Every structure is written in C-alpha cells, then in structure tokens.
Image (cartoon, rainbow, N blue to C red):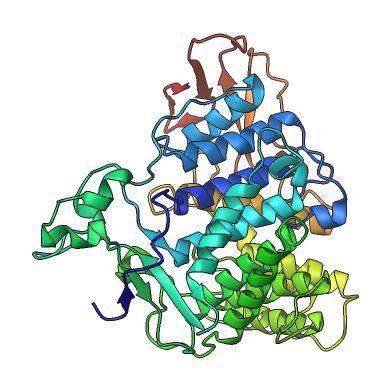
Length: 481
C-alpha cells in the first residue's frame, strides 16, 4: 500500500464519473443543437451568444440529471427517447437515488474529463448551461469538480494525488466494490473491524514523490480543466481562479512526454486502460492558450505568452495525427482529440494564424473528418445507422461524442457535411403518423421514429417505434417515462 495518504477525502458527496461525463457531452450537444449554425463545445466564442431554444436546453439538462443521479436506462435508444420526450413535453424528473455505478470511488482520470466537458459547456453556453439559465445552471457542479481536482494537487510541493478509495479488496481488506451501503454509512462502517478500515478511512493514492513527472494523460486533462476553471470563475471568484491557473501551468510543466509502460490511470489499471496521451497534452495546452490570452493573470505564472501554449498544442496535435492511435477512437474518456482539434483550430484563428506551427487548420479539419468518416462507415453496418458498435464499451459516451464532433466540423466548415439532423437537433418529420419524429444518429443518418402522442400533462407512457426493420421484423415499442 505504498504511496497512499489518509487525507484529502473531502465530503462524502459522490461526484459522478463516467456517467456525468456522458451527461456533460449530452448537455453540450443539447445546448449546441437548434442554433444556426450549430455549436459544439467552444463555438459560442465565434458564433455569438448561445441561442438554443428551451426544448434543446431541456433535453441537455435532462441528460445530465438522468446520468448524474443514477437513473437506470438500459440502452442508448431509450436515453435518446427520454431526451426527445423531455424536449417535447417539458418533462421533469424526480430521481431519488444519488449513487452512480454503486461505488464511491473518485478518480482524477475520469473527473478531469468530466470537468473538461462541463466547464467548456458553462463557459461557451452560459445561457443554456451557466448563470444565464434559471433551470440548467451547472456552474456550481463544474466548480465542485474543479475544486476537487485542485485539492488533489498540492501546489507547494508539486505533488499529484490521483485516486480516493479502493475498488477491489482482498482477504484482509474490504474494498468499495465488495459491499452495498449508503455513503453516509462509511464513517462508522464495520465498527472496529480492521478489514473495513479503508471503507471508514478511504486512502488517497499519490502519483509519485513531490516534483516528479506526471503521467501525460492526467497532466493534460487536469491542466485543461483548471485552465477552463480560470476562464469561468476569474470574475466571480478570482482567488479560486488564480489558484486554478497556477496549478494548471505547474501540472502541464511536469508532464512526462516520454512515458513507458502503462499510463497512470487508476488502481487497478484494468478499470480504465487508457493508451493515448498526446491528445490530452494538446487539449491542456489549447485551454491554457485561451486562459493566458484572456488576460487578468495572477502573479508568478511560469508562462505569460499565450503563443507558448499555442505552439505546444500544435506540437502535440501533430504528434497525435502522426502517431500510432490517430483516428482510432472518437471523443470520449480515452481520446479527447475530438474536442482538442476543435479548440486548437479556434485558438489558431484567435491568434491570427501565426506562421511556424507544426499543424495547420486544414490538417486539424482533415483529421476530424477522418474520425467522423470512420463512424459513417460503421453506421452503414448498423440497422440504426449508429456510428459506434453497440456490443462493446461506453456506447452512449461515444455516440454523444460523435454528435458533438459532427456539429463541430459543420460549424467550422460552414457546411452540413455530417447532417442537418445534427445541426438542428430533433426535427419534426413530415410523416403522416401522429407524433412521428426523426432520430438523429451520430453519423447524421436519420431513422424514422413513430411515437404515440400525448398531452404534456398526461401520465400515460409514451411509446416509440423505429419504423426501420430489424432483420425483417418491426422493433417492439420502447416505453419512455
């Protein structure tokens, strides 16, 4: 048990990890659709004030709340129907359970990704996800995540902590996944039983000795989240924001740019076996460019020239594009290039497209298109035209990520290359069937959805049928709460 400390545990409130990250992507998409042109994370800086309608905001908000509070929906299709129902009927949700995935572990690996997405949404869609919304304001939620990441970094000693709690126990130690309980029971769980000692006092794991190099995946995503936090909170909480930016620069400076063996993710590595890291450094540097370029900087920053970070981001973009995992994945926990390409493209524009960068905007667009075209090819093999296999991991987060990427590409190019359905969200079809709608897939293909109509105040379940056939038979209706 080397490298742990019984500290930094913080409140027993659970910060949802991958599910909240999925939700954050959905919220960004919900805020982005319905605009002209559509905007994904970050686009509001170019396209003006966020103007998504209340239906799209309701869909995004519902998506966050459903995932954050642990509401179990068995499939991506059901989640999509729930979003559609919320958008059309103004549905609200009374969700009583607050645990997600049945555990209370906290990982910098997953929380950093979640915070990256939430903060990007709050920053770029303030009227849909930030202080401008009376019903979908995630400013406090995003700050909760950034604050936890800040607490997991000891700036005076340059020490990173990356995990709270133990997932799997053994013969002498009970782990989080070994028992079912409410989080408030942890403080006294098992009384004095030594096998439960790490439930009562959750260990915090240290990434390495003070001042040591940091696994680049964690360094990049942590730096990105904290740089975004500086941008979001430098007016409302300048002291907190300054701490975030100082930490972001210090963390990125310690990134191990020549890692060997497994990246540091969580214990055990098999929980989150990430292999790509160049995309994370690219995103961290891009967000630091925007933070430093925005001015009002704290004293003592190691780097105050935004072009320093622009060059770093371009370097790692080129390393990713020419590296072993280029376009092997799409926007999700394991590959943030779908967001990083977009942010760097915009940073290059803001900087006036300076010469000497290791990547061009055309190169970024081409690589984004390469990822999306793979999804289109995958969708051609699926009955529902979905751009990611249904029988593997994290289908929902990949689908939401693909939708954001498609919207990003269309916004940057001023086209609808990947589908007007992505750009305009849920589109009412001209079908004769009452309540018929089109379901927008992550690749821009549309499948006809026939839904029974009901009044917004009706308690009767809404049922939807994909009109496409599955091996010659109509898909059974799915109940939508």
